[in-house]
Length: 78
Length: 325
Image (cartoon, rainbow over all chains, first blue to last red; front, side, top):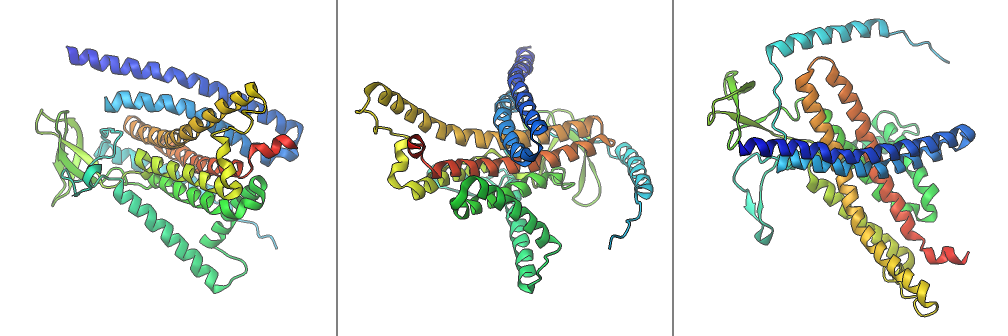
């Protein structure tokens, strides 16, 4: 019985930890939006904007990945 | 002199259909088993290989063969490119042509953001990109995470096994009675799903950033971290600059963390996704996930190298010069 409760708490905790991916999603969306607007107004800046956009995506994605790592730790390690 | 290429899709679509039908038969013959997912690398041999003194025991985990494999691939690629260069062809083709394109793109990127320091920074950037790329794409080789050693399951329920003749066994999806089950430890697991590898690479990247900063600015580089320069001229803002320096110091350590967790998290998530989708929908859908993982591996390798390059380029020019401009 106690083992089942611990199991349920693990799953609930992993699910709660992934709420943090919300921020990463919003951040990626906003950076892509800005880069696409820039590309539409100035198509010559395409390459430069693309690399900087990927860098920005990596930075904001890292936050979501932290949440994912915590969820994995809860599911598979603890 | 443009020759029209023959339209091949008419044949290829029947190949794809044939492989889908074959996979349906293969799945009904050998049903896929959900692997036991573990964050730390699994040990192939239970006993430690040798003792490292205060560091603890050295185990043969399944990412050690992966590391050797990646090193071997990188060395073989280097030899192939060297052979092609020795022949002296002006137009490289094959592997060396692909590498020339890759190196040219990376060098142009470095030159636009690092300027005259490009020759110092470029080797770190390119070698990190190539090593991480190969270790990310390693996971796409079939059989790399499915062939391994059977261990007796301890602590958790194992699965039944079926003899295939000789020392070969097949792992079945049915759970065995407690105490008789087996778990599978693959011989090789993708290298970037081990946190030790990504952490080591992140430490190399951040430490070499400091080295390049010192090489570019001398001892003045450290005034970024311990900022006493404006402390006595203007007391209030000088103190603020000192606090900002402490924040910079913390952010250097945070860089190690974010580098290593970004690569590890992405690649481990891909591994879990492949394992789960491969057991739930084993027909055709995993190939799309493989395609997605190919893309993610490319992006993550590029991002790791690119961030290293950008941080090194930032370290070469101090912010004191910018204020006077």
